[in-house]
Amino acid sequence: MSELIIGSHVSFGKDKQLLGSLEEALSYGANAFMIYTGAPQNTRRSDINDELTKKAIDKMKEEGIEPTNVVVHAPYIINLANNLKKDSYRFAIDFLKQEIERAEKLGIDKIVLHPGSHVALTKEEGLKNIIDALNEVLRVDGKAKILLETMSGKGTEIGAKFEEIKAIIDGVEKDHLLGVCLDTCHINDAGYEVKYFDKVLDEFDKIIGLDRLMCIHVNDSKNELGAAKDRHENFGFGNLGFKTLIDVLYNDRIMDVPKILETPYVTEDDESKARVYPPYKFEIEMIRSKKFDEDLIKKIREYYKGGM
Image (tube, rainbow, N blue to C red):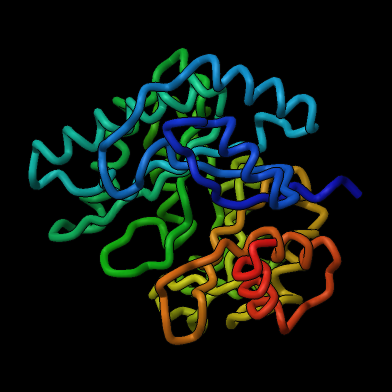
């Protein structure tokens, strides 16, 4: 069996940029990671430092981390599905173009994108807007692929059903630059039974094609099947559970696909949220051991409070 490709979301600060992201990922015992090239809620971006990028790429080679297992996530503020406000739609297209350029400058060839919400439009109109935007955004000479993320179906989100992702792919001319990021929490909330993951993969393969599956967000869910709410839970502590998620991670059909944790930070205690701690080092250790630790949250708090 191939080595498990596992990592998490890590920070991307202006001072160390990709090098800092890599160092954080390594501290978690990861061999993959995902970044936002700036805060996902706003447009503030620092210039890419080529020297820091080169140092990061050199260190990735030393550590055996493949650049293909590093992923950029496009910011949440990009909504390609709604064009009622022409200026906002134009901004979304132009900002996504910039994000693609930034990813390519960092040597990253995968960009996860939420397809968007149609809001006051029909779903069909929203799908057309996404297709039109991607037809403009994707370049003939593009190196980075856009990975459309499967969504939970909250509100007017597009992408909760595989057929919707397929409709976008079919409408885009340069579809060789499109892939899919499957999120386990999202598909659970959208009504797909993750505990029967091979059946989910069979359906995905029939509708979209497994060759399009290029990233997996491995998140537990606070919600019941089909809740359409999108609330992530720590690995093994939600309604999907440890065994189901382990079976996803170690499924032979997708061993070469990078898996990324987006599980919640752990709060200082059950009442206060004054401080929060990243769970990824401990979740990755638990995943590699394949043994559920019911005291994981307590151990995370003790580790960070003790400054270890």
